[in-house]
Length: 95
Image (cartoon, rainbow, N blue to C red; front, top):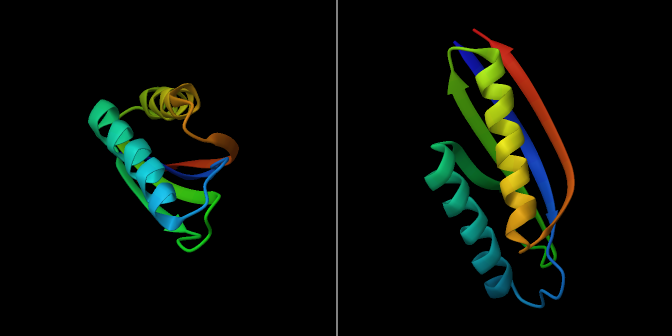
């Protein structure tokens, strides 16, 4: 079993309330879950308006598939245009 896990740091421009931030974060999480069947959640910075840290995990039986799926997730988040992808950290674990 191969597990890919990581965190994505997003900057949400023009966000002036937690309600506006929550709308953007929920949209990103829902889209990633629906398209890639990945586990996704906001993991840090819950009270910071313009910054969101999202954790994700993907499981497969092949390293190449996990790596490709993570790259596609990053591309999708950038293509959505709701927030700027500032940083990302990914790790692949073989169990």
